[in-house]
Image (cartoon, rainbow, N blue to C red; front, side, top):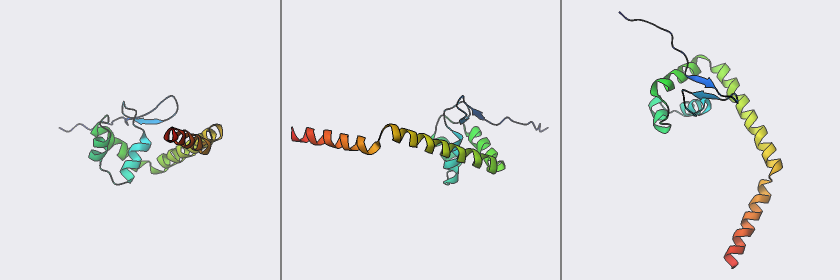
Length: 111
């Protein structure tokens, strides 16, 4: 006899509110992006060996059944990443850093 039981979704939010798959550091963002780029569950596990195949299938199923909510979460994460990037660029001017590194390299070549 086949016993049907509900399974928990292998996605957990960490202390920073980042959704991680299974007991790994691989984010929901990563799995969804790979899936949307055409990767199969097996290919995703190959790319991220810490993942279990069953967790990837469950995560993809969750994503497909909750695309709007996951999409909103991913959009929020992208917005947060952009805000952090802007703050870091204000603190540490990337062009100034690049110029200093190029100047340092030129000095080494002259010596």
